[in-house]
Length: 46
Image (spheres, rainbow, N blue to C red):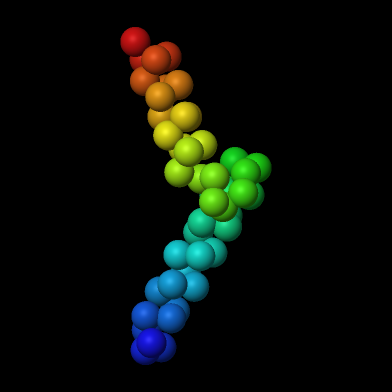
């Protein structure tokens, strides 16, 4: 893996970790939690 690819992966990992921290969930649960939040927003918007 080239250095540029490695740095890109590390940046993405940092973003995922921060998102999980903000939402107070495990990183592996982010897709499910975000999907749930999106559905709730859609329902609120009517």
